[in-house]
Image (cartoon, rainbow, N blue to C red; front, side, top):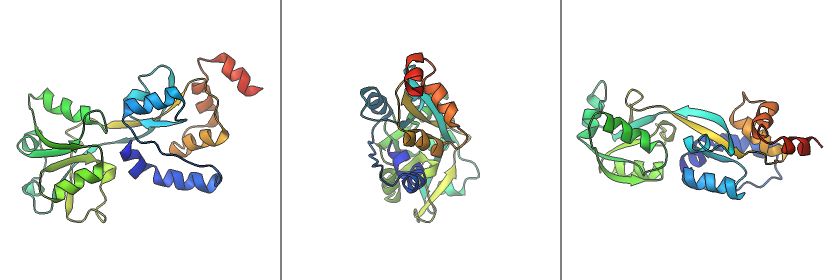
Length: 218
């Protein structure tokens, strides 16, 4: 998704390029559903998205990292004076956040629905930078992925903690089960999650495909 391409992947890709300078990378951005479809069609070797990857039994999924949503407002906004942000406070504001189906939007909706609230989401977008732009213009209070905020780059905005309001999100790496990969594909997964061994990855990818394991060993 855009959030991963823009914020979490740059250091991984930099490390990968130093190891495999002759490998060409193509970043196909899309929604989680589109990413799953790319994996099924073979258009993508590795998918990076949310729970859709672990809900598909034909994919092997590995955890990448966990993140939370944050609230962002312009400097001097009244919410900056509040010691703790509540859903009631957010419900009284025009909100700017992600569109349906991406970057944990379902978790935001569930949090408000659980307390019987219907927030005024005046603008929704796919891109965190777009959301921040309209927050800067004073059009509403933003709710974004925490890693998309940089206090140096995003001068004029303030990030407020919202970990107590919304469920944490997990980003997953997905590969098609039984599909052989070049060694650099396995290494890319390891660069994303350094706790995974090569055996861990291969065991999961080939766990339901004995023939693929034999072919690979040959």
